[in-house]
Image 1 (tube, one colour):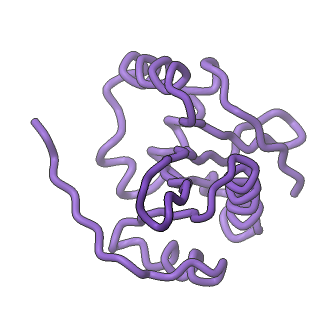
Image 2 (image 1 turned 180 degrees about the horizontal axis):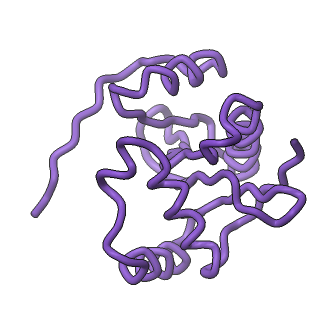
Length: 150
């Protein structure tokens, strides 16, 4: 399947949210109508280096998405890094190479932005995702922690 990757537009937000909710974890944590997602998209657009990317098939259907955040920092000899989040492929198309194509797109964008490192996190319960990232050459080099802020 051929995909075209592009920066998302505001009218893509509903399709992206549907992809985010298209698995057991996402179904439990996404929802609440489109208003907060549209507001978040507007904020992301106003920030430099925060990209929402969609993969569109030949018919114009949004079938994949990821968020790429470019981070400048001092560590690792002032290496710029790219953080990949919210990686999703439509459930009916998983296992067909779209994820690998999407991650290649993310890496190309990161390189073009001068990044020397690309990083991501995945939920501990996503065993297939972990194996996928390892096949792509990612290493499980860190332990991540999160804390919700009320």
